[in-house]
Amino acid sequence: DGGITQSPKYLFRKEGQNVTLSCEQNLNHDAMYWYRQDPGQGLRLIYYSQIVNDFQKGDIAEGYSVSREKKESFPLTVTSAQKNPTAFYLCASSPHRTGGYGYTFGSGTRLTVV
Amino acid sequence: AQTVTQSQPEMSVQEAETVTLSCTYDTSESDYYLFWYKQPPSRQMILVIRQEAYKQQNATENRFSVNFQKAAKSFSLKISDSQLGDAAMYFCAYRSYRDDKIIFGKGTRLHILP
Image 1: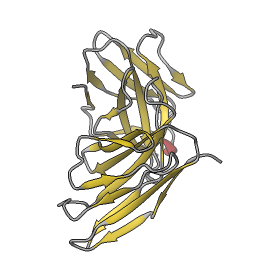
Image 2: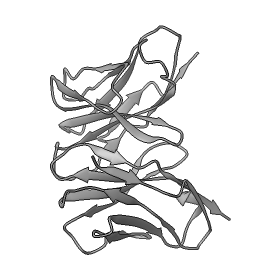
Image 3: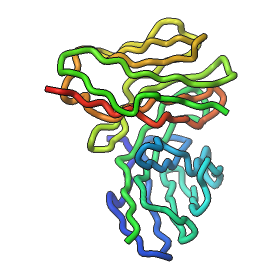
Image 4: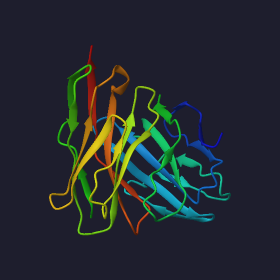
């Protein structure tokens, strides 16, 4: 079945470490997105990508980095520069960059700083 | 910039009753799309219903329907015959016709009372 796979489901980071969250889709979608979810804050856009080898910053990109080397993959790195990384991270994809399509979401990664 | 506001952080409804979740948005555009997403305790985001702004007819999906008031920039979700499985966080969301980013409200947590 087509879908989006996020891994790991739970991730623990020590202070000063970089960690990478995986997002893979087999839907042949062009666009992919990373959102951060905090209690009472809704979903906030971190980065998005419309095509391979291109991506744009969202509203809260500081302390994060991404790559889009393959259409299927859009990993998110949480760097040590992100001061408050504990959150739930959601990856999503959409067939095209325009046209009013809704997103298909992965099941999320819960990141905790220890 | 577009914004989405959900003024009810939490709501409760008796099982089998009807409940309406409110959403307002702000935009200067005329072509756009509106969505309601459900996030159950599993945290998997599920698209509940989608509305195209150029359509006057309100979207319906089984027990879920919307009241779309374009002039008032209001997009409420009505859940009829509430079931225990409807307990979740509900997010209202906006997407411009020309853009690929979806803007989410902060959510309304819905409790179903048996």
